[in-house]
Length: 78
Image (cartoon, rainbow, N blue to C red; front, side):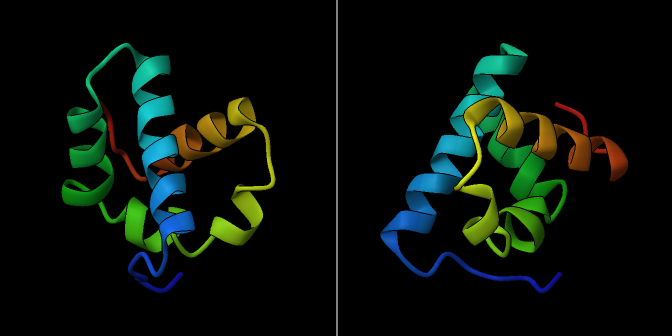
């Protein structure tokens, strides 16, 4: 996947939704999740943003589990 930057408010809202939802599921702060997705790895820019069109049509549980799976594959832990 390409590294993409957030292009509009829909993608920004979705990125925040993903971060907050993962934080809620993991019982950690949103900053810790953001750091894992954007600073320790490139998952935000290389997976979440480029896959916005597909991911945002799914349910919350699916989205969270999918991103957690990608994190695990890449050895990123929160």
